[in-house]
Length: 219
Image (cartoon, rainbow, N blue to C red; front, side):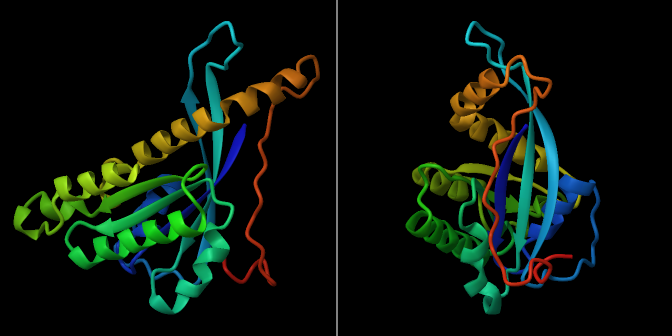
């Protein structure tokens, strides 16, 4: 099993927590309260690889350790504690709010400047496309605008609806596949070292963000 740390960033009320809960619990709460500080959740997925002479595994379990950060400005100073040592980041905006894309772009810049993007998979996510299904006039951020930006910056890009579930799982599958490609050689080498033992499970462990009180940021 591969374990990866993933952080969500974005403006308040863009639906970061709703995306996480749709992925982890397959649920949606119309009246979910804003996250305070950050919340921690985890979920596993299985991705398929190709079997070959190299001994590459067919199916690999990936565990995401997810830090859902608060979007309010007063919590912005806490963000580095959660995106430090992250393997992936979801930067979320609301397709009906232009300002939220501008904020998302600022998060991308911060991640690239302070973390770097060589070992960090960044995915730009436009949420709330369900609001545009019945009235396309509600859409403010055009898909092409965000997609062009993502391509220019070397980001993954998806539009989703946390409310209906549209596209949410695909985000994490794509991130998992890309992370697997970056860690594949390390993973297979560790697996080969364990061949013959009773434990066939290989874990790539992650550093967790440190806090004075490990329960203060979670619920």
